[in-house]
Each structure stands twice: as structure tokens, then as C-alpha cells.
Length: 286
Image (cartoon, rainbow, N blue to C red; front, side):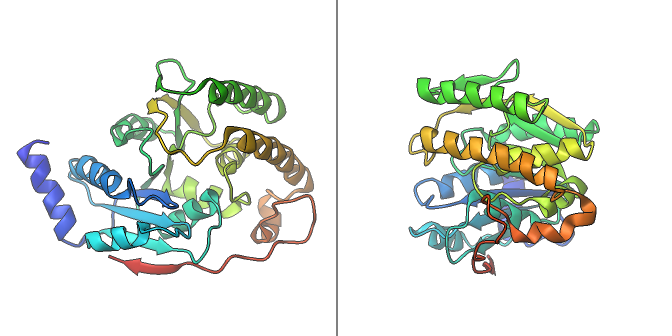
């Protein structure tokens, strides 16, 4: 880090913003005590170097470890911590973060930094060139993927084939946890989002296609981080279920703007009855 970048980082970490942020970065977190602090440090150091007003949002998803205490202990004036009383799913955590974001550009990035924050620049370039959504991709030509297990690779290829066949999405990797949106695109897509678990990315990209938004797929560096909470077999079954659910919801008109009143039901099963809602998250600005 150069001395100029260090000065910008110190300014961001000690002085509250006096203007609306241009950039919002959201980290969904569930039991990330081991890595949340270094992840925040890496993101803060890089994004602060842009010399643009920005905010960081940690959307905790009902962690039962020390994640919340560690984030609070940093006492960063431009970090917003959103706390949920219980685990509700990554998709729900990201949606809460988006609902609070004030930036013109919104990025959500996984807490494990499998995709390093330095890839922000490549996605932002696509947004500045006119894309509504820019998605990090481990499958696009030029991607640099390390330590991806054989089983995970098999599942990824199979799921990618299913996505192209059933939803006709022109994206080879829907699940990389590194995606950027314009504020307008984020507000529109997340307002219609229903799926709260792992497949929420897939639903967002289907909605983007349905609405004619421009989506750019950007090759990224990605490393399979140790301690991943993703069970490939379980996720594959859920993913196939949600593929069918998205098609069903589309057929039923759930995603149509005129039927937007159906969206808050958060339909997650084949039944028409909506599930019991999770408690609303509490907020703490630190």
C-alpha cells in the first residue's frame, strides 16, 4: 500500500462520510469470526484507494460465533452492521444489505474472499461501459481458478448445463459470490427476489434476463477457500429444485411487475402457503 493509499484508508476508517457514497460493498456473513476482520481490512484498503466516498455493509445472518462482536469492535464510522436474530439464508442477508445501500454502484462479495477484492476494478469497468449487472465468473475465458475440488468441478459443470437448458441464461457461472449492480438494477431485481438460499444468484440473473438488463460476465481469479460451508451434494439438489421453482414462479406470473404483491410471500416450496417470516434484523451503525 502506497503512502497516499494509506492516508485514504485512515481517513475512511476514522472520519464519517459527509456526502452520499458512490460505492456500497456488502459482505453477507454467517459464523465468519475466523476471517471477517482480515476480509474487512482487505476490502477497506483497496476500495479506499479509489478516493471516492464509499460505505461497507456487513449483513450478518444470525451468526452464533463472535462475528458480530468482532465487527462492532472495529468501530469503523463508515461500516453499517445489519444483525438478524436467526439464520435466514445468504440471499436474504444480501437483500437486507441492498435495501440499506446508498451507493450508485453496489457490490456483494463473499466473506471468504475466494474472489479477491482487487477484481472490483474489472467489474466496475463493465458497469461504467453500460452494463446493469457485472458478474464474476470462474468459467469465462481468462478466469484463474485454484484448488477447486474434482466433485465441486463436476457439480459446477452439471449445474451450468442445467441452467442453459432450463432457463436459457447466457451466463456460464451464476454462483460466484462476487457481483456488481447499478443502484437502479439492484433495487429492481432484489425487490422481486423470492429465493433466500444459495440459488438466489440464479434467480436474480433470470430476472435480469426477463427485464432485458445488460449483464456482463467477467473472468476472475478464484481460490477455493478452506472452511467452506458449501456442501456440493446438498447444494446441487437445492439448486435443481430452485431451477424448477423459478420456472414455476415465472409461469404463475410471480415475477411480473403487475403481480409484485405476490413477492413478499417469499415462496420457497411447492405449496402456496407462505412460510413463517424470520424476525426483522436489528441495525447498528459502527
